[in-house]
Amino acid sequence: MPRGRTRDQDARQRVLNAAFDLVGSEEYRKVTINDIAASANVAKQTIYRWWPSRTAVVLDALVVGSMKATPFGESGDTRADFRAHLRGVIRVFNSPTGALIRELIAESQSDPAIAEEFRRRFWRPRRELSLAHLHRGIDVGHVRPDIEPETVLDAIYGPLWLRLTIGHLPLRLKDADDILDAIWPGVAAQR
Image (tube, rainbow, N blue to C red; front, side, top):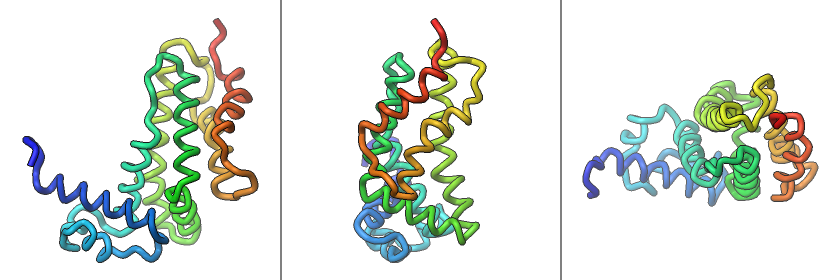
């Protein structure tokens, strides 16, 4: 075992990996805590020590997996970093993970507990990461300081979420450029 890493951390990571792999290969509603425990080679009680529900495990696994797939770069160019991030989000949305996200959103419409877990475990961490990057852009003079950051994020990410959930148009990597071409002139600081 690597130095400084506990058995609990290893078990927790195995659970997250197992949950992510299982929901990537079959429908979310078919995956059970028993399936996750068996795949991770842990007892169900181990899972319930860290997570209150299957949804919580799956959402945490989704966050870990999607954050790895959609990191924010630190190129020194805020727009370029958002472009790269948007392209990563599009790749995730076009993968089996995107289908899982759609399924969780659908279930959250009729289950307030799933809705709250989705917002708390998946939406907020990702939103906070994007917000922090936008604030860095303001701090370094790439983004206007008088904008409403939450509105800017809605404008940047809204088209992707709309296409993911409604499916009226495909999600293409080119969309990252199209979105930023439409939005960035109103966001960029004047130099």
